[in-house]
Image (cartoon, rainbow, N blue to C red):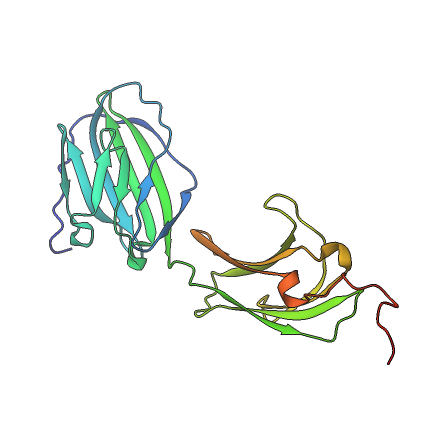
Length: 234
């Protein structure tokens, strides 16, 4: 491929390689950074390393390291790669969606043993800002009934939606609810013991998550406060 130089071949016999069977799954976020690294036990110094990137088709060489010098080959990653630990680790800055793919490293030691590393990177967009819209229903002192819509500006297949009810940051409460509209809408019925609850819509993908919440006291302000027979007839 034009613009990709051949990496010099090292003469000599290579001992059996230590291969990685399954790529390590890595998630990244657009405009953020991600580090590709794995614990390695290297018995000898590194002689050279080749990093490749594959998205659709043939792997492309993106970085070559030898004699403590490194060279970047693929313009897509110019000024965005930062090798470390003798180039066995790779930091990728300013991630783009098109950076999703397989990153592989072939590490050759001075004793000619070869190690293989592989990472399957998927770059996601940030979860957009969220908003909850409330539809109160006819309520009583014993029940607070309402419907919540979790408004998400951009819906993608990578987003998942869930709901939680909690009293504190660590204490969660059970609640009667029915979810529909792909999880974005929930109909809730609460009893008085949940009148001080916080209801959260959580939206996430493998690289990012956000939540938005409402309080039951704001939806049903008189919920659980009045007692039967407290109203006087005219």
